[in-house]
Length: 500
Image (tube, rainbow, N blue to C red; front, side):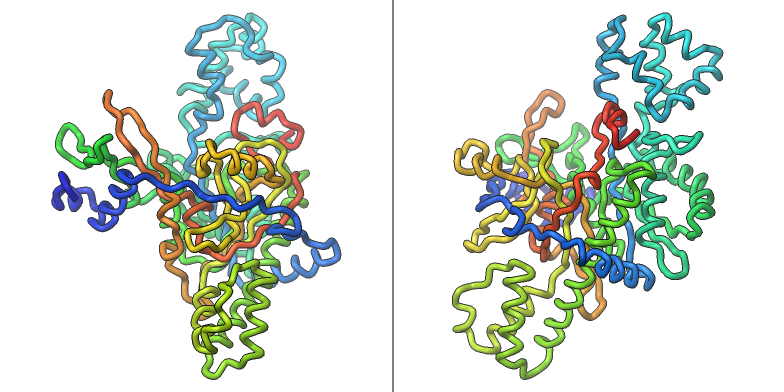
């Protein structure tokens, strides 16, 4: 590693081999993902017949009762991005009403709390609005001394009204978890990942509210809280490929993106894990639908896992028969849509057994996908790998060569969207947790150019948590109703009908 001493790596707490691999990616770049075609209903996306839903829900409930399920919520996002337009208004210092602010503000779930905060400061909110003092109102929302929303994590923002109170995004996850992952003893396992600067506030908030939800739902929460491990930070390189150091000679490290949370998921040592973003929640009137479909995909995963484990048990026993091998191959093609090599039959019984065992002995995920309604983000595609085989992957637009007309056409033909509604089976057929790091495609990392103290540098983010970090998992896409997807990317999204 030219220009980089091992003592700098050691001082940063990094693995020299990992640093070398990161620098290689920074120098050589990462290849574009090669789309073969979109996943569509009947070709990569399965649908659940209405008559099958109850059986799947029952299968989910049985596994949940046995204490197998955990909810994992990436919650490190800062709320400042939600309020970007309001921050811009403050910076511009415009006196006019920003986008009908006076008319819409009372519709937000945090309005009554804002009124109380303004009154505590000796002001009258209605009077401020009537007199066009919008900048002052915005400061009460965004700055310390008021709601301080501009400095909080998205998890602690009020998303919905619930009776006379408001519920934060975090509280909605607690409520939904109680309805989906509780076990027979009422224990409910939920794990949040947060930013280091917000850990104390989130922990205090959880401690303050969990008793209320335990009483309301008759559960006992087993809550976990973790931050991105500094060991997942990545190095940077100058445009010549040399590692970048700080002014005091230390290695310049940057956060490795949400793919860094694979380590948190790995450390969880879970069994069946539901993964859902912090901002994808809904008020109580939509919870029945959301809970129903989380249980449907949970039951689908449990059923598939049972069949996979049965195959692996057969493949691990001596003397597996020809009929069993053919049945397993048909299951791989039909139910898991795996692209088996054409010469598999010619490898002999033992060669086939070894190949199929390695193919099936992997983590499994069932991903809910919704009809594409123009939301920004990734979607389900068939991707052709370096070996020529196709597999089902969640792909972001930044991963494809947008300058290639054929690839652009495939991207634009997508019918479905990834709402980050996943259920993951992360233990093997012996009950041992997988080392999830083994199933990452490192070539799906992201390399971009950023400015650092006036100089251009190349920075690296790990493969996305549900993209390249799960590229080598067994993957099934299932269509779920659009109303199960309720993201809040900007504060204005809270005015959408499904959040009211």
